Length: 492
Ligand code: ADP
Ligand code: MG
Image 1 (spheres, rainbow, N blue to C red):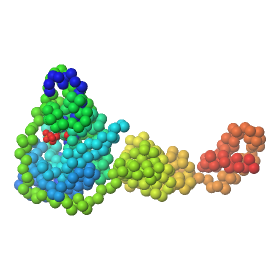
Image 2: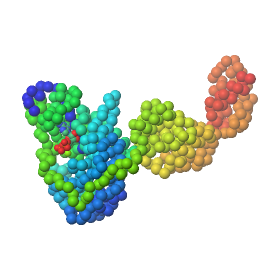
Image 3: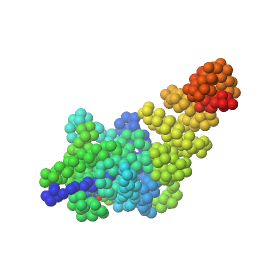
Image 4: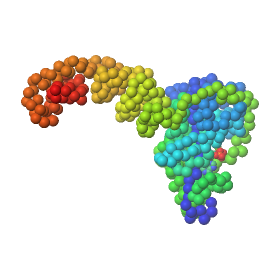
């Protein structure tokens, strides 16, 4: 970069490469199980997954299906046929010396994803998304990658299906990448091809360069992109990590340029515990990989799958529809569509009961109480019927809203109780109408002074009488209703 740049305003140019683990039972090119979370190291692997180039692989249909769905969600071009290549390199996590991946005919091309960052709407171009196998994993003992005493290798992960999503260099600030990753995860979850809870299921490499601000005002041109020295930051595993690592790089690169130094084109490692990026190695040029087509994997004809596979309504569309169809505020619609499960749950209730009641119960009461307990909707798996029953009890006026929220819901979450059992045990059933009416009449008969005060215009006296009725009914009457009944009697 010329010294002139040092005096100009600089702007960040960022592109992401996101590796997502696809949820399949078996690995992408062999029958080994992918469920290796609690397994002993090196027990879920075979020679095809780890070290042998010579055993005929075959592709996992589930992984291909997932990639086709993703392509549709990203409005990408899905070619008629797609091919696999060997990417040749040696690393201890890849003893066979090549990774099976896709090269010039990836399964998704030229897509996009819309992202909102505060009030800005950004359209992020997706260059490509391709299928590939994960290498094994390394565990550094006694330090991090650059300081460890030694390193252990586990091939349980080798051969796990990944899709690598490569974006255009369309991000202009670290916070945009955070919003993008959150949105991407939302879409992946809606498609049912991804498990956010799984360790390492989302891994990000972030490319960043600083260019003169004037160059990125409109369309950025190729020459500027190529001329800018960029770093690729690896080992990022969360939205927050991406934002922090990139913010660190913005400062580091800006400082270098302003001091008249060149930013080295290199690969850096995000050290999350120290909150810094460290230099790893200078970046390999693409030609080093000597890509060649995998002869054992015939081209995949994907045209049929593309025609047949359907994807569910995605979060943005659903958010908008919730607003229109149920009259929800933008905030409520957003909360209720944050995951497909919550959205499905809300809709099931809204169809049967009042949508406003359903929205209050799911968005405010249920999510609020879950949040307070550090729980997620996934913790309620298999219990949605119980929560629907709770809303039914309120909708049908069998218990008060307050008891439902403060007693039943809490016991359901804390003790795992069923709603009817709590109502019964705590005797929360609303008192029948005739019983309330009798209590109202008794209270009036027994408290002539309060009645006289009320008749003389003392509004406070009615509260005293409401209290008396509540006492007689053991607190199970509805105070608003009691107030109304008392006035009816007294104003006659
Ligand atoms: P390589 O093959 O060298 O990794 P690619 O062209 O595949 O390079 O791009 C990798 C990533 O780098 C993409 O996400 C792309 O958007 C991003 N990228 C390209 N040019 C720049 C740049 N000047 N600054 C930041 N990111 C960039
Ligand atoms: Mg690349």
